[in-house]
Length: 285
Ligand SMILES: NC(=O)c1ccc[n+]([C@@H]2O[C@H](COP(=O)([O-])OP(=O)(O)OC[C@H]3O[C@@H](n4cnc5c(N)ncnc54)[C@H](OP(=O)(O)O)[C@@H]3O)[C@@H](O)[C@H]2O)c1
Image 1 (cartoon, rainbow, N blue to C red):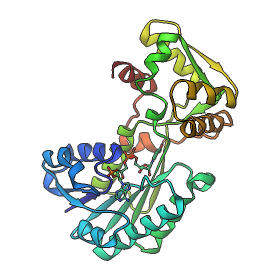
Image 2 (cartoon, protein in one colour):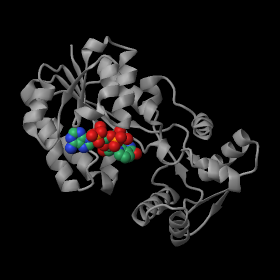
Image 3 (cartoon, rainbow, N blue to C red):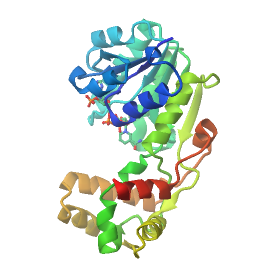
Image 4 (cartoon, rainbow, N blue to C red):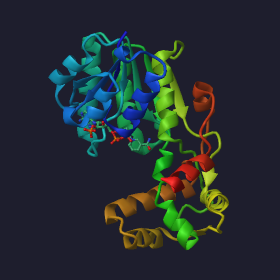
């Protein structure tokens, strides 16, 4: 059996490989990297690493040869039409290599999210092959909100956002990686879609409360407008385009677009890492 993991040099893929190593022998795992020179840490884990670039179908046919199951991690390309083409190359190469099961990292509630069209398109492409699939419809990464720069929020006692009282169903990459490793190594997940979001969505008031408790110092969440948030982020050193994107994410949260929940993740991996635990780690990091 060969379990093939694309995007293995990325943050999610690297965690998947590490979770897989707790479940199967290293000889069953193949990591695919577009730049082999970035893969030395993977090679040190004792797994086979093959070169594969989504833009280059030939490289994919070598990368997927003799594979049993494929974890296809979506491309980080920003241009959506180019991303669709890359994903079509991956799906066709998987079919031609005789892959028996494709697990694909889609996005939570993709059919209701206008920003997830690439993921829906890729899901449809996978269905056309008739290869059994599992759509891992990942929620937003908790690490987008919970990271070491929260230390600065503890220092100045405030978190500013334009998210209002909106709730966030984000999940840690490690939990999502364990979900992927579980689907690759267990039976019973063929032709299933899992919306992998938190069972316990939290608000930025909740985040401020967790920071206060862990740091032993009062931290409050203050709501500001979209424009105020954007300029605060730019003044803190964030590039303007990224600041604008972040403020848009907060608007989506304020509108309740990241509050929807399911228990798919907990059913799959048996637990979810609580927000407070992630905050504790972020403050230590
Ligand atoms: N759920 C969310 O909140 C969320 C947020 C952002 C992104 N995503 C999606 O989830 C994916 C995984 O997330 P992540 O945090 O692991 O991202 P990441 O750290 O940027 O990793 C992306 C991986 O995909 C590889 N890759 C990108 N383009 C490729 C191509 N053309 N051919 C072959 N490999 C390619 C990258 O290779 P290199 O190491 O060479 O760059 C890297 O290994 C992202 O690619 C993106 O599609 C989800």
